[in-house]
Length: 461
Image (tube, rainbow, N blue to C red; front, side):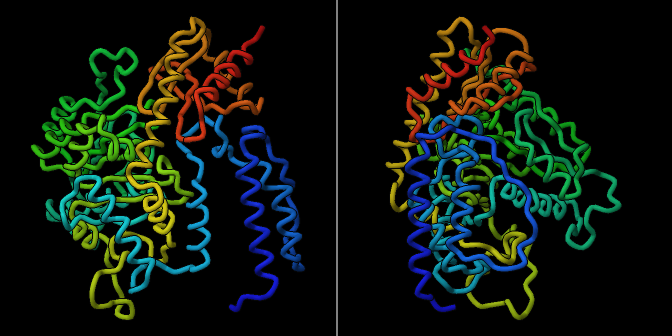
């Protein structure tokens, strides 16, 4: 398809729309409800300018909200402008990164190698980019299931999980991400065979009781397991409270029982990989068999950009490769042999560009900023006699106003509707909580103070 004269003007207008959106975002409400009335299937075409007009009027004024500095709800960072630009370039190139010898394949290999080195994985480790942490976890568990089945003398690719006396089981902590349960169901293990390991608080931290997987409890459960353990999932940064499991102790338990260790570092991975204060956690993560990361979370890449790292990528090829003759090639195996996707988008370019631009030092500064704003918020909550701090890990702060769960739900709804700030709701130790997460370098301590002002303003007089 050749570039037409009008395409240059179209590109310039799109660039102007994107620039205006990003520049004006902090001055508008964090969220406003969309009014998107359904319309009939378009039978006749519409000029591109008219389509862009409609996008500008009906779509762009109603974002999710995560680009705004007072969006505190979930682990959804704003996209770095260079990531947006790189994503557009990747879309223009539009390759399928299943494999072959073209630039997109080499860029992805480099990104995987960089992250494997940052994680402390040995030479020869590998992985691939996927849609997000959920798919990364599913991919890792599929490889772990294949290895566990092979050790039990079962050809899971040929026979599946049919007719076996011993169930395949997964282990995770009480705050393990829900994607683990989805993966268990998709892989045929069943949610009944997901073992929840009790939590253990960190001594001296009142708000952390029960939020971290207890390695001693895991050891006891594995020792008495009658089924076939597939994997243990530890977490580096739970999305609920931001806690980091004792990865080194869990790695010791998994090594003693010969069980696959997967670390879900989708949220907290960047902090663990890059900051010296988390060196102990990083040393434990380096012993994992697989790790899931989400550059589209705390590395500010546009969605979607997930990553699964594998200590021994040949096991993934054993689990997934099914190459027909017309795709088989000499040289390096194709990425499609290591996961489920055959058609794979050029996810790596935005991650590669941002790492080139910011470097490790730049990312460290941005993440430290987010942690400092969260610490400011937690301290402000602790000083307010009308508020109760329930948990604070990484850049997550969970708190509540004095009163009932229903009152806190009303406060949450009022803050969200106000447009002044945006929080999420959650449950911490059985109590309904207001949950704030800072993953936006544009968020300041003044924004954190504005959030608390919005909470106070939402209280009934």
